[in-house]
Image (cartoon, rainbow, N blue to C red; front, side, top):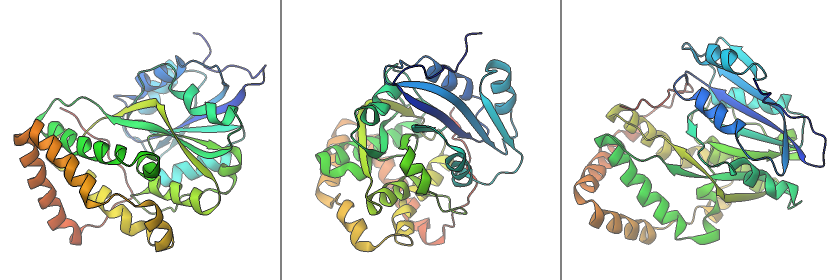
Length: 305
């Protein structure tokens, strides 16, 4: 088998790819293969890590079977993504750390190269985030979730460069060496780690960039239970950020007002009115439940039909 790891024999940047994972047997092999096939104009892949957070399926055995060069850290206890990301940050030694969620899909071959390019060009970012898009929906619930994503994506794109916070998502990110030295996620929390990383960078003087050419795809919730859980985690993150950062900092970047959201909603309702009505009903149901919601630190992969 061709080696996954290339030695750094040029002026390319030394990159480590790290994937925290919990029960991702359905996607982990495809994901690693897609990363292996990436172009490497700006970087050399020095190491590849999998941090299994108490997986009880075949995630670990599949990685060990198919990829002998990947380092697998098989933790038996489920402690949450933040715990494993912090372990990765403490262990990192290199130029750029690529943190990948185990449930994303990478289709294009230049995704990571475009993510590393700002570091290679000495633009001094602390974080570079990929452009997260939703996978094509199949089930009815997925179509409802896709409607919501379309409203969200249209809204944030209407802001232009001012909407950078809304593009800083946690599925695929690159961290600079200097950023990894001081950045740690709060452990024991279950939501908002992508927002937390953005505000941490902003308050510590690090630049954040979005690589629109680094497109990755996320699966949408395929059943009612997963959708409700995802929406609750999404809605609670703003209040959680106020626990860590000054309200003035948050107001500076949380600039998405009613008008662009309403405009985007109307556009999507015209396209698919029936799906839109179900989306609004589900949103109302979730918001009624929010006062009683207590997030759990454990992560549960989305189950698709």
